[in-house]
Image 1: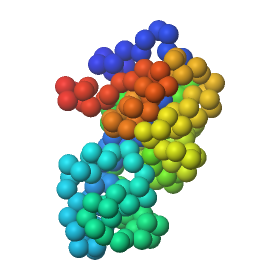
Image 2 (image 1 turned 60 degrees about the vertical axis):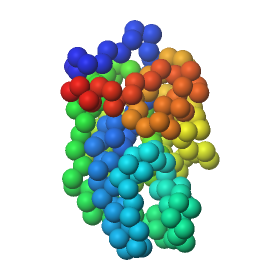
Image 3 (image 1 turned 60 degrees about the horizontal axis):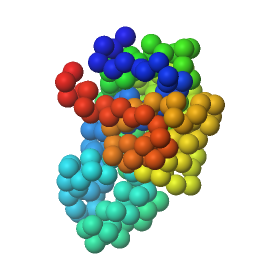
Image 4 (image 1 turned 45 degrees about the vertical axis):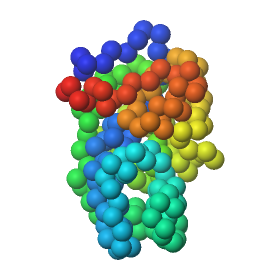
Length: 198
């Protein structure tokens, strides 16, 4: 079991963000966005991409339109971005820090995934890192009316696991997810702080 993170004794359920927390998908998502940017004649700064980490593709498209004075169609652009991602998806790798925890607590604590991504990409990521049979309770952006930083994603995760909010531990790498978890009184581990020392 990973020695960097210990699960407190009072915790009864684990919730994992996926992109950037369990699966090292963020560089791949960024490359997909770079392709879209090239097709639409603008540059998407990498720092801005990470600032918007955890936001759904449709919302990122709208924000790009607003930031750069573009008029990209939300649905068409989002679909093109997801297609570009799937073409690169074989590059996705596991993040051992959190994947090891998920495997170690399989069958011991309820676990779920709460993500701002869509179902088929989330399923692909979990399969790519070998967790498709370990984390089977999944809440995606398609399952909520209000994505992160609204707490609805994690509310649904906890409810599906049957675990009180204050007894949930959330693993996150994005500010929006951290905000959402804290709003519910959940404990949060910012995996970025641990990954920097691994």
